[in-house]
Picture 1 (cartoon, helix red, strand yellow):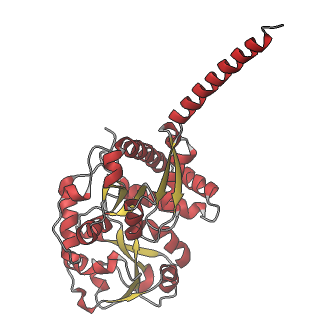
Picture 2: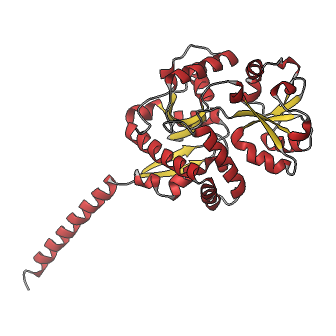
Picture 3: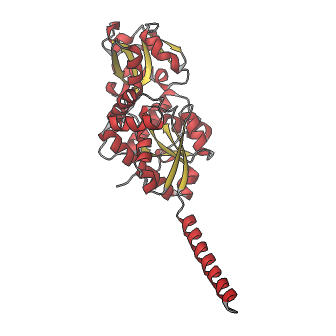
Length: 328
């Protein structure tokens, strides 16, 4: 009996040592927590992020993702730059403008919308059947939208004079009603928002005029990261991109199922509208290598931004995107 306390102490020591090893292993393999910020709000067009979360694609890459809403791409890149969010989704225009005018240190690491979503929507019974019919009409969009700012470039490409067309500013929530009640002839809208407009306009039908169909060739939204995280934790960026593109591919293969996952996570989002938005995402996202970024097209994007907005300094494609993060 005199050896019992000694044996008990030895058992306790072994237990503590084992516990310490388990805690060390647990800490070593703890998932990386990532705050991800959208480009604007939370809609069905963002379903593929929730597909990646729901199906465990982020977990497979040892990432725990928290998705937060933004008030626009300009706000998103600022959150990523100051590490309020580690990664984000933003328009290439915002990245170019942020880098050229405000030295905001963010770059695109994967391209989700290689085809531009900029569009104008009208009612089919409006008598506007071709882009040239927009001359002299009244159109509406939000005050900070790039669609009105690019309108002159679009009109030139489509072959009509934009000077007689009037643009008025409105709140984004008001645009569907303004179109459906014919208070304006058309509204500016990313094509991924068509399903929302269509639901508001029903039973009236919409006609779409995509800027890309007039030959405007530039990048739009993609995944962005800060210079700091690209330099200091490239593996995290690489894993996040891999899981997200896997979610995107899955959602593109079955937009309806993706929409149902989105609705499960956010019941306020209508599953039918979300499915419609994901179909539009598919139209924009398809390219030979999902997520790929071409430096020549980045330069085209910079050129279009420079022709549309004043830039304080000249920037290069290498200032706007970082290669090596899209899986082979």
